[in-house]
Image (tube, rainbow, N blue to C red; front, side, top):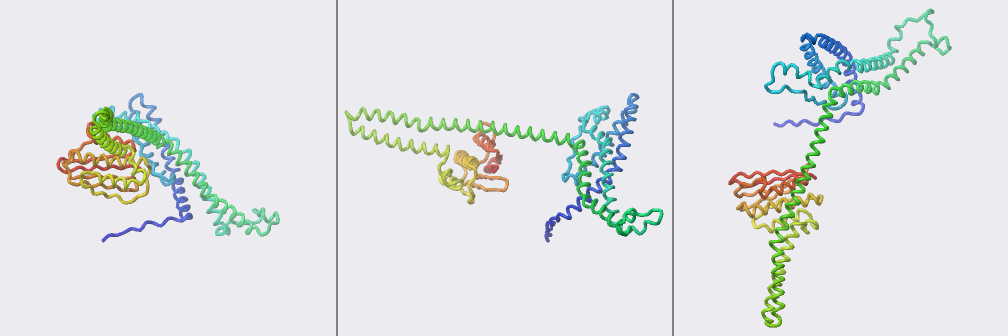
Length: 434
């Protein structure tokens, strides 16, 4: 039996406001006593530790104070999350090296910058906590006291010794005027309660975030920027390598194919020119042979042009180009490529060359009886799978045929995986971003 849990209905704006108001209130009210405890413990521990460090007694006291500040900082990071709307990551504290001695283990917290920031937060957090607490208590007191005044106004004694100013000024009944006045105060505090408490909670929360996670977030941003730079450099190097490999292969194909045929064509035409005056029949035979050489040269040039920019890919899209590619393969191809909208030219070209190169390698090296090609558009990108039932043993190592293909895929921002156990066929999987 399967139980399906329906997704929670989205909260209305009013419910979100009241929920956030409750979270901010408890954060502010709890932050004041925590800040009071933290400032007493941290200041006392730091002062005693620094004052007695000359006799070595202060060293463990100072380390214990840092560890205490770290524990208070962990609690504060958990409290901040509902206020600022995001979970605070736990920073990476300095670890003790493996095999370190007792002294090294003891002094490692003293060399950790984040530990000192935790201590600084424990000492200074009382300032924003006190400010936020004062605003929170004042606004809640004004709201609750003003709006509930009609319920307890009767308990305030009145008499000749405490005459009401409204009555002396001729404003009417003193009790009614006091009720209206206090209700106005209550509505003012109630109307401004949410922004005031929200601002007070953010003042305290963002102060804590700056000291407890600011350095760690900056370090993570730098690491992400460096990773993005390394990825861009790797893609650039892969693009250069793939381009160089393609140019070398094109140069080799032209030299081994059309160039040799054109040289022979020139020689045949020169021989035919000499034969026209002496042996016209032989000249006609030579010209006919030259025409055959011309047709074969054109066929090879068309094949090379398909390797550079297939016209069917440009005109009719990826599915039609892959269908034509599968039809020319010498091994039966089971193509699974559902219709899809046109993709970016770079993505379509890369996908086409992935399949083309994979089918070429299958035909040359795999001894397979069948190959399956699947091209699917997923939410994360374009997934290409080429699987055969051949001998396996393919590798992405340099010097193998798939290395240049891996560079082309990496240059397009994609990833490629090859699984090719000996005797169990080869499965090539490529994921290209869209």
